[in-house]
Amino acid sequence: MDATSALPWFHTTTIYQIYPRSFYDSNGDGIGDIQGIIQKLDYIQSMGYQTIWCSPFYKGPQADFGYDIADYESIDPCYGTMHDAEHLIAEVHKRGMKIVFDMVMNHTSNQNPWFIESASSRDNPKADWYLWRDKPNNWQSMTGGSGWHYCKARNQYYWASFLPFQPDLNYRNPEVKKAMLDVVRFWLDKGVDGYRLDIFNVLYKDSEFRNNPFKMKAAPSSDDPSGFFQNPQYTMNLPESMDFARELRSVCDKYGDRMLLGEVTGNRQTIRKFTGETKNDGLGLVFDFEMLPFKFQAGYFHSLIANLEKDFPDPFMPVYVFSNHDRTRSMKRLGNDVRKAKVLHLMQLTVRGVPCMYQGEEIGMTDGHIAYKNGLDPIALKYRHVPRFIFDLMGETLNRDEVRTPMQWNDSANAGFSAAPKTWLPVNTDFARVNVDIESRDDNSLLQLVKLVLNLRKDWPVLSNGSLELIEKNKLPKGVLAYKRKQGKQELLVLLNFTGKNSNIALGSDWRTICSIHKTDGCTGKNVTLGPFGGMILAK
Ligand code: GLC
Image (cartoon, rainbow, N blue to C red; front, side):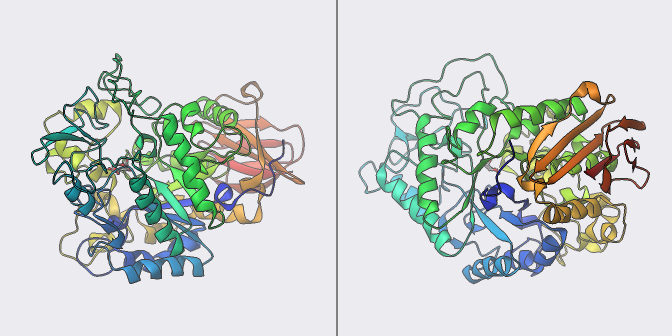
């Protein structure tokens, strides 16, 4: 079926994730800030991204660098002021782009006045704003270990899904729901185009606090959040959280089309439920984290695309994401091979779905190496006594500092990120070779390819609106992935070579080249030759 052209903007857009602390430091204190983002908006616009998502810069102790909020309606001084935030929204809109903020609805900081009041006694007005129990049950937090923490003033325990300083709000209390929906409206009134929703799938917990069942699984994985030897049946993906997705959507719909992009974990059928059953009346989009630990193989992506087409058919839309501020960068998973990164991102930007790229991914930034014991990240510190080779073997890092090193703008001091003598995290040592400046001047760089394809999306709406048809594997040489995008009269064919060898493909009819990774990737009417890790977009 041809997809319709009446898709909401958030189903056809492209997203660039900014981690403000590490993007650009405008005032020389070693920490990125909102003015820094404003100064670099032209760069983002020139690449062709349409939407930016900013990780949080609200007021908070920064114990989890923004994901611990003490006041949702003000800006932390280390990032700027309310005026800066308003200016940012205006400057993004001036460029015809959209901006979504990060909204952490599940938990606040333990320094939030709501929590301080709630924790002060058993009978204060906010006593029931968080989850309090006389005795812990068996629930494990998402980061491992019991999520129940003792509070002396109440002689009770409070629940925290993530880290102890991030107590969970109680959404069964209507006052809490109202307070958070007011926060949502506060920023919508200021003009934000929507939200990325932090760990949205744990918002509701079992009202009876039943113990989670045992499951023989030590660590959570991208497609199955079970871990720490339990199935999080009563702490995650409750139907009430899915209902709340619809409620939140209806609040936001009053403002016109607004993006709601959920961070949800679970298998694909489960995460789909957050977007709606038959209509897309829940969250507009959800991340699909199953693809974060991807395998660089044509067969892997053939199955991935087939499954996403099955589980997110029109009127739903999948999100393709390979990096973020929490997980190993895609470049590291690719063995720092820029040839592979070009194939990966040519695919990401041409499949049917919303591509979401993380700052620095467009230039091939890779993970830094920072010992867990030196980590600022509270997760790294929690696991500092565990030998890191265990996680290295799994291809993951538990020190998120490594994926948050400053953006590499040029080859000057601190990679042009900051004029401070010391930046909050060290700059990756490869910055003289991997930076925006150098890649902007190199026609063969990853950055130029990303830019080319992002801009092609404007001339070829079929890339964002069209249907997708996978070419069967038996019609292609081994290691080649191919699919067609169709809408109305537009028809494109994308061919990607996941191998280091030449590949010849007979097309059966005439096609012309729209773009190719290498000059040597060629199409002569009915025949295509793809060089090693080559890729092309062809038009009928
Ligand atoms: C999400 C964020 C992560 C944060 C956590 C707790 O997973 O992406 O950075 O630490 O939630 O808010």
